Image 1 (cartoon, rainbow, N blue to C red):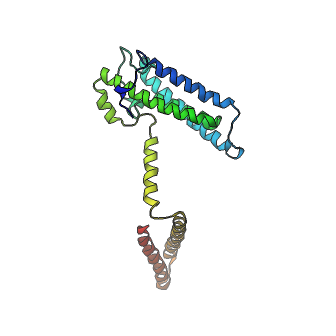
Image 2: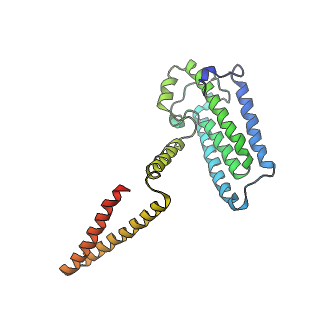
Image 3: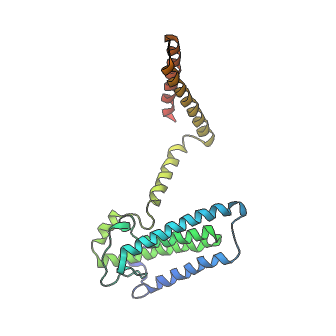
Length: 233
């Protein structure tokens, strides 16, 4: 991606960027009226998922607009008397309004307009470029913005990046070592041995003679030995 200073301004305050995002927004909305929908067996699932994502997007937009107050503007060049916001939702992501709009487009597309996923992806790319152009202007206006950007590496949607990194870490940790069948088999063995441990505890508690307790102990130590072997999974 080019640096923000190398991107075109598209107007004194970046009016061209807003025109492009309005066109893509209209395209996303229009895709809901072309008669293309999800197959019946997944329509309900994507409908609920899209609604949840859209609600999260609306919340993100509202939080961003409220935090900006009178400094809010759809244009990328900041106003003359604006202040740099670093708290609230801006302590989690640098452009929550852009992220919220992307989530609204994604939610609408999943719920009502599968074809809308294409202009939604283009809108995300546009916002990425627009945010770079905006940050170049913000650094010119606020020299401390560079430090804020370093403290706040997330750009659009909070927690989404952390979830993606977590999923990637779990996948890399389990995928190369165990296949799906082996992992399912290991889980079944773990559940079985856990039941053995539970029975051991019950029998040890209810033991009245040394013989009964010794038998329970042998089963318990066998379960403990199994758990030690599972550390290699």
